[in-house]
Length: 488
Ligand SMILES: Cc1cc2nc3c(=O)[nH]c(=O)nc-3n(C[C@H](O)[C@H](O)[C@H](O)COP(=O)(O)OP(=O)(O)OC[C@H]3O[C@@H](n4cnc5c(N)ncnc54)[C@H](O)[C@@H]3O)c2cc1C
Image: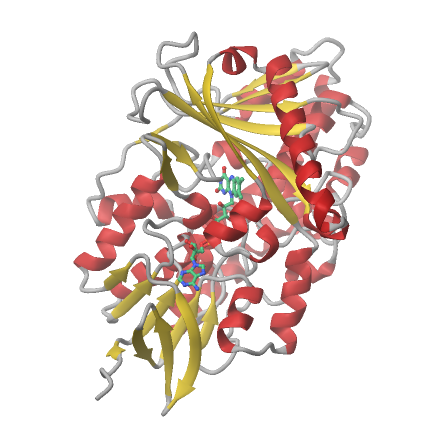
């Protein structure tokens, strides 16, 4: 006789930060939750993995939401998580051929650093940042108090009503690219600020300043100032602690348990995973639309449209570097952002984000660095199969070249190096074609569609970076929280 399926109130497929947040939030509300993760560890794109004795950040390295009252800090406090976070100063060491800026954890310090550059138009810079702050304050308030995000209640709508004046600075910029805001302040050609924002937009809203939807980009300009921190020992520590918190609340977390099929049966959703069957009236898929389509064996018009948007985005080309323990590097963790040629697109090795672990972290034989650069998935997929490997190889070579020029102290310290490509991402995180980073926020009103959580099919929901608010660990975690609120 077949074993009956393991029953729960909610099944979550995927323990990325979207799935972890949804599962924890539902477990906190008393639901019996089962979380299935294909890998042997949680976190997905924001995890820590080990290879040959080294311990590396997989992708994400710099996290916001750890400030007083913010989401991540609330989790650590409520569940007494054994997680230490370090606020870094500088938060990012930005290096390009024409200028360098050490980005401090406060806006005022960044403004002062730009104003101190030779020939800086200080009044225009201050006016730009004053406008930027008004938009960022309005939008970050929604992240700081997620009950203001959809689904709305009568109370949240009332509070939105009271806040209408604070939203007015956003209105002129809806549907317009960030470059228009710089132009309004006469700064579109001032290369230090333009270059810095261009690079920041690429790693946050996943689009250049000429494309990025201004309200999102103006909010993302505050990325380093909003409870932003390094997780000591790796973001995997937080992901693991969250999985532990779910279990403490009575949830079941299964690692190395890939869901291979999802179907409706007798009013329940049934998931096949590693020879076992799980059932629940509600399933949350922490997957790309492509992954969900292949699980249910069919698409829907909404899933198909979202899948196309994901494929207009990016893949990540990586170096995971093992560094000498006693290398001549600062003791703190450090993020070095490099722009090689500011006149070329900030992709394909011309732009790197290099994150060094702290000197007092246990990362194996020495310190580690995770280095990433963007590659267009559409460009890569257009190449014949035989040319894709060499194309990615050339990007990896360019990355090391730029590292040697702009971060020689890191390059000199390399004693082990492991490359990765979109294909590696696809193999490990099962993200179709290795698409990462979510749907780019390119200017347009489409950015404001589909922000109300709604099921894909009755009882079947999605979380993750292809949804709203998407992008970044905090973004996907907030999305998971709001889906949990809708379900409960
Ligand atoms: C190189 C890089 C750098 C980044 N830097 C930052 C940063 O500094 N700060 C920041 O906040 N964000 C950063 N991001 C973005 C951030 O990592 C992502 O937005 C976020 O982690 C995505 O989370 P998610 O929950 O949507 O999905 P994922 O992280 O992809 O999680 C999905 C999970 O589902 C699992 N899974 C897939 N299929 C199945 C299946 N069939 N059955 C069971 N499990 C399955 C996967 O193994 C994975 O663990 C970065 C991303 C990349 C790629």
